[in-house]
Length: 479
Ligand code: GLN
Image (tube, rainbow, N blue to C red; front, side, top):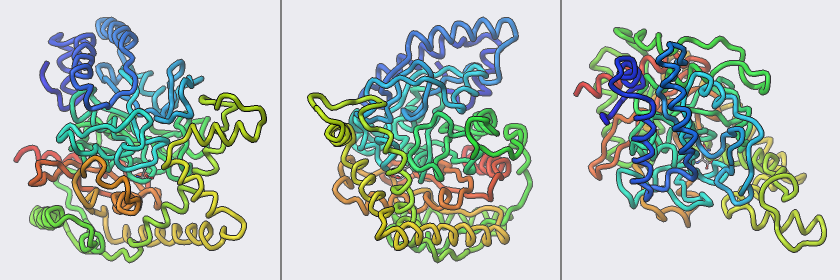
């Protein structure tokens, strides 16, 4: 089968009969089998995907197929899909079956996307390397001894290796963009509230967003447009009108933008020298193409990671209290009283990273420390939001590398949590501020690994962000 960059190409081949949905699904199933060493999928919905493909082929013949017919999609193991197991890649949810479907997934299904399987991730989406999955680590298709990034590592690895056409991940602090960067694909975190969180297993509710991973900006635009918008099940899903992102993709043509790059990011000491050099050269190219490129100062950069980890662990400690061995999934055997049931189920059901974060979050919310940590971090978050919005008065986009380094070795950072947390230094900013951000696979390292450039835009400016991204990718692909 030919390698399709966009769903448009697939759909034009479907239209002239040169391919069918059944052939597409069969092809991806074969690739999944051949590439099991990646560990990208934790479950493949083989029969069901084939059945759905047959139905979609019928609909195509009758002219009644939805907008996303031909899209073969993987979903991160934190998205509920009625009648299917969902575990957040945790032991504590082993055997748990979704009672309803996440709105984001439902809307794609309604347009005839085919869900081919469930993809591994860091447990409860906590991690930057996919090494915290109960199912074991996922490997980077560009280099099997490297991590794919996290927490949506299975999704990124699968799309990058051609095991599905696109995937849905979730991004609380970079979990769509960072693995997209490590695996050489496109990943978007929409504005907070752009996509409903109904049916997304919560990590940190004031940060979490569902986001697509794909090989092209076009597909990211199409998927986002279908998923986005108000939802009666989630009051934080915004009623802000959803632009027609795909048809606006050409709107950046000929436009000149004001692009601010964060000086502190480019000067940050953990930044790989090659990524720094590439970013600087890239900025020069943008200036040469007529954009107004300028350094902007964001002195709060050094506080984003600590602020993020205080607030997200606080929210996680509350969100994860529902997993008590009584209502969901894993229950410790041989216990006689309720207290012991809670303690044992949670101690055995959660992995180390999750337990560490629940304890940290409980600590920052505890009576004696609440003001010193939680309240203080909330204030810092507000300042980060304010300073970021100030920057957008002078710039249309903010640019940074997506990650300070390309993909690192499996096991390299597992014993150094601070080093692991710093992998998110450039991505958590957008979640703290609630703004949309995209990672574009523009860079290529001498180690043969890809890396991404991140663009951030003001709230609900997805249309412009995607249009500019498309322009940048077109230039890159034409080289
Ligand atoms: N790596 C970050 C964390 O561990 C981000 C995770 C995410 O976006 N879900 O919290």
